[in-house]
Length: 382
Length: 174
Image (cartoon, rainbow over all chains, first blue to last red; front, side, top):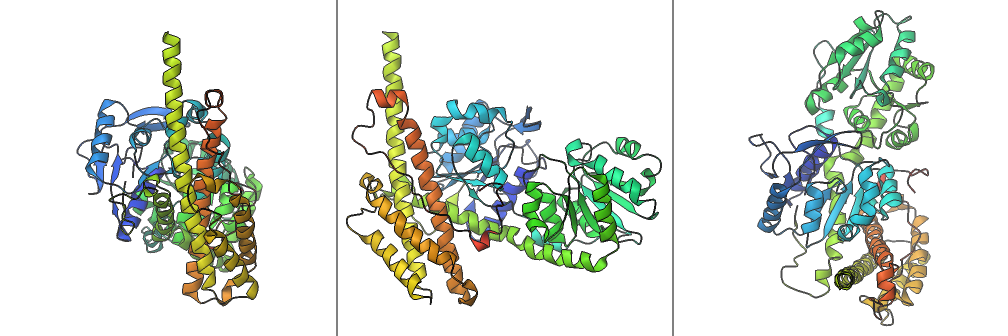
């Protein structure tokens, strides 16, 4: 399995790669991961470092990618050292390790597309220049219907939809932070609160209306961003009711989800899956989210969470207000969320990825002329 | 001279790519054929209606028919249309099958076989798409790089809405 982004830096794709690798190993398969990493960082034993990553602007944020002769050599050596049945590359359109591995690959290749951004310059360029390389892909996976649509419209291929996995047991058994849950109600927000598209201004406006009748309401924020800036934007009435925690990694996020009465995800666009929604559902935390296509899918059309019109503070305030007063409804949503989250549990997701691997092996041209080493019973994959 | 040499190199590369794509398409067909066969066999294990048994039988026969070779380029021609009809009928019967009454191991086997058929069809159609794209290319058409190889054909069957997939597409990605 090849991950194009620095494995020692937290991120969605990295978490996916490690979660899937662990899930597959749990099912008894041999998995090796190649990824950029800073020398000396602690890595799981199945991860091989491909050298340092360089930050370059990609897809609206800074992606830490690796390329150049060192990466080329390490990728070649890693491929030679292991006799993989399947090579699984993540985000191969990023100019990085995955693309190098694809160019060098001589066996079934499965790729996973993570992003649903249609603005990527790489996607635009990919079609012409990269077409001969992309032809080596045997099977494609998209983590959401939106990622699949980008795949169909911009890259001319179809993909099997398999959602992102969630470490369900970790979120389900998380303990609340000291002092939580508290009387008066706590609303949670997880993510980069400084980015306008994540919708923090909408939530602040909604809270300004709510605190008039609920003096003890508190907002617990966890994520990367400038806390001082956030408190300034909140204003003097709201600032004392906001607690900001730095990005804490998965354990911390799980504890925060276990502490709040509900999670609010007021994003106004640009979301392709909404990992935090599925994590909250696994934790049994009711979710109030914007009515974006991606969120609607995760929340099963509103059966496993509350959907509100995106970008509307009054609608959000009213939904939060109703749910704060209705513990029974919160318990129902928590139960529905936990039930639904079972489909994202890594062992479940890994089994579905395995079906794709097995199909890719069955569609391996080397099978047409029976040769040695085409064992079907046990897979090694990268 | 230089232009001619560059042209020759370009044509050779296109021919290599084309050959690789034809082989990939054939291999993908073999996988799809096998997946469809497994689906029909999984259906045979279901205690179901006569219509179900009949449709599965037809699908199994279509897969076994010596007139429809299971691998190789010939498979992409006439036989595919017949196979599509038969598999579509099986898919239709399966879509109205009430699975709540099925024994769980049997239902799981059936769902697994259906998912694999979906994946194999995507893999095959992807290979066809890439092959057709290259075959429509100027260099390939003018120099007749494809030789006598028949044009591969998409395998078009209605996609089942699999219950265990968990997602309802509501137009977002369908």
